Length: 145
Image 1: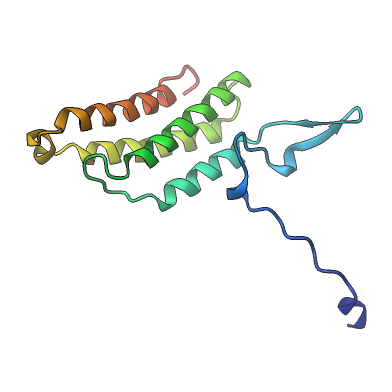
Image 2: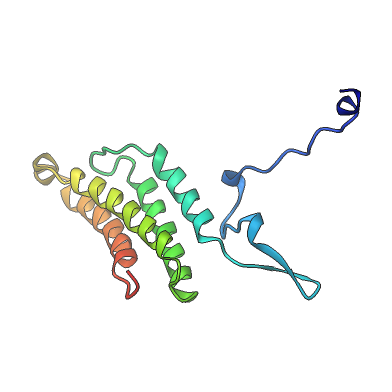
């Protein structure tokens, strides 16, 4: 027990939420001929997006909270582009992307109500919703999915 007291504390680990885009898991960094080569870990990136979705409100009215859902849709679109560029072999992440896109589309659909359609700013709100829907469509409408 006395030898445990002499050990220095481990250095603090950086939180995945503090990382910036593009996300690369430390587990995927491998030495190659004296250099460090990073292979993207799409599962790690997808987990980052899922963590964002987990804290977003499921219900929304008009454009309330829509920018956060738009950011998630754009990140998802970027991850899918990378997966496709790498040969579209990560089927698990593509399924996770589909599940997230279902959540986004559900949120968008619930925003379109009779009350919204009768409002004065209906067109601007619908345009904002449609812009997010187009980003989600770009995720879902790929040859690999």
